[in-house]
Length: 251
Figure 1 (tube, one colour):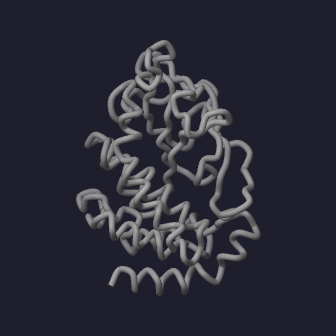
Figure 2 (cartoon, rainbow, N blue to C red; figure 1 turned 90 degrees about the horizontal axis):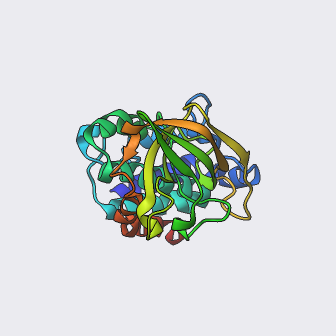
């Protein structure tokens, strides 16, 4: 039933626009202020928070269901499928698995409804798969962490309201993986901005950009998981992320 529902919905609302989305290097359906409010419709279908608990507005379904949704969205548009995976799995699922109750109640409902858009920011210009070589630094200053550096190739970056951002909180610890912390960063936080929108050879409609952090103040309460244990946050859901994202090329 879920596959049938998603196939019908995506073929009706997304597939006819897929070519235009890639040609224009932009997916405009993520914002409620325009006529093609695709993202909010996904929220109404209950698939943005498909594996999230019902108490936060989620559907409390399984990861096989998540893969099926990823597959059918990607069948209509691989670009939008990638954006869906980044939002529903890389952002929402990280919050579900690692957030405290205050963080979950603050961020999950609007991400799950589609009112807010989520992203994960790990890659940098000289740091992709080699996570521990990242240069974005976070220094503790009172009740805040001050972030300086940038992130690159961030899916949903131009549109995101909530981002899971990984930064170095201890540059001297050995091994280096022990000095990385995950933060919840919001659009509009002082010192945070998006920069150049990036083009790609494929999946062009998956909005991608560079993020800039210049003395960006992030409240200490926005640490996701434990301090300097960000790699554990990242790795805790990695197998599930690979599973869900595999629905993209399958579709």
